[in-house]
Image 1 (cartoon, rainbow, N blue to C red):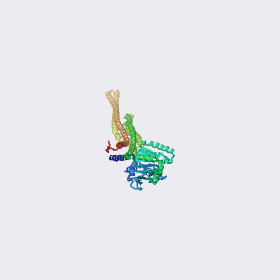
Image 2: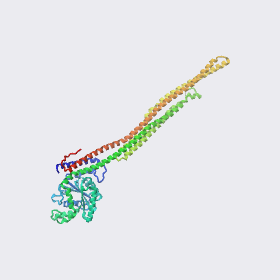
Image 3: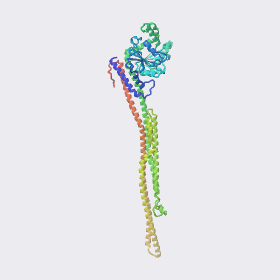
Image 4: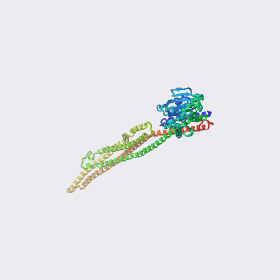
Length: 627
């Protein structure tokens, strides 16, 4: 590699490293299919290669396929020796690393689950240049007896510079094999598909099966990045081994193995590999390989971030709808205070009329023939205390009704919120719902709301004592006026009697008729003054009653309405408060995901820059990126 190409490779690996680091928080919680890369898969790739010598391999060719497809025989045929064990059952339960640059010969590493096999470059029997090429034989992708086999193979595939995928003519290109190729395509790998064991087919069957495999392969890959070749690895291996025994220096085209070599199809395969493993192709592939994995990671991350942003947008819209419902409910509850105040007005109107009727009865006991003293002059005043008890009971009922309406409305709204959050795909751990449920029981408790409203008006209701005192004062004044009227009336009657006597005496005796007339007039006048004073006293008491009750009732009514309004507003605020944590969660989620999307775009931009550098042959590359 030139210095510029080496720099390109470093930058390419840096892009992959950054993509892995960014993908971890994005994909760790994502649900990925078996044909996608997960953050755990990518992060484990490093541990798969560390200590193997593969991380810095000049060129890594990974041979993959289902068990019994003939992968091991294929590698044996490629290198011209029996390096791999073969058999009808899965024989490879670890990575077998083959190459000219392997550090040991047939060295097992139990810790890493690896087997190394060194192939001396001067004994290679293939026309393909395997210098600086490392071959890796992998466990079968469908080795169900050992589930770890498939994971091991899939973890290694992203690191391959070239993937040779072996499928057997016995069951060519199954759906599971096609799924593996879909994964390989996602990583941007160049692929050679080998249809193995074609020797079991007739010529006609071989043409049909090869055509089928090509069609299935080209359904997945573009034709310019994949080749499909039919071979018999068994015949190719036999030809190479026979040629070696015949002294043909392993040239399968010479000696007794030439016919088998021609029938094996390996000539075409080695021509394909020779092109793929040319120095120029290897350098370009090596530089682009990390970008293919990075681009695949970025695509998956973009899909996941896009999905999360769509969910967030959907939740934001739903949250807005729930919030609007709460707002409309709050506006409707705003009328509950007015309704409560109106109910209080009705109570005090009835109380006012009841008191007026009681006041009109002042003095009636005396006029009906009652005694002169104390309570006999007026109707007893217990009705004043009775009215206070009645007012408190009825206002308490109004407060209770208002509290019930607020509580029931708030609970219904909170249930809507809890239902929304419980069914929400982004609700995490049930913490929000749990907190809301607890808060609902406390904040929207009917008794709690009633107590808070009542405490706000209790002082106003206690002011009835002042009202009662003024009314009793008015009644006392009326009592005095009744007494005065009655005393005057009695005096008038006495005077009038004397006058009548005088008049009578004058009539019989002939004198003092004028004095008698005056006495009668004074007595009658006193009676009229007494009765007139009673009416005035009633009027004064009635005026006091009306003023006090209207003022008191207005204040109590307004404060009841205000208390209900405050409870409604508090309940509305509490419902909206239940939405706020999730709103903040969505806001933070949008911020994080939009930030991720921006970082992903930056990685894509750097990848494009490097690709342009590779396409230009690495010349003029300065190692920087346009931001």
